Length: 121
Image (cartoon, rainbow, N blue to C red; front, side):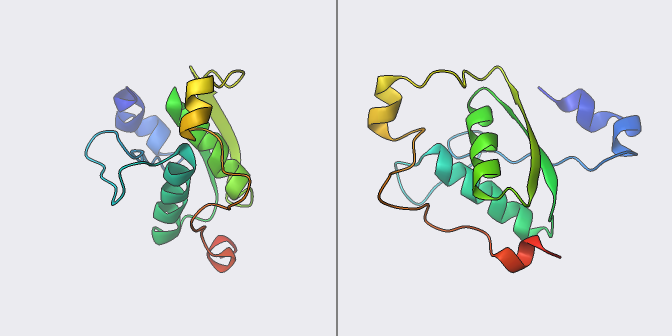
């Protein structure tokens, strides 16, 4: 979908682009069968930390918009802004809520988050 942007020399001369596939898309795999948008957001932040990226704007298309939003909520020091495209941020279905796909459990924080020292390089 974004191949033209990644192929653009003009865009590449102004910023770095990184595409991170969320769990369940492309070649991604998870050790556990059920995962949420929160899990994908945490994994994306961990990828950024491993690559030494301490500041970024996140773009998410469709379900990726939910993930980008969660990335910003989890680590606003790193995610400085979000662009959500084709994402129904105004509505979360009852079925989605029952599966926990979009809503973090009220009683438990996400499994892990990037260290604060990695954010402040």
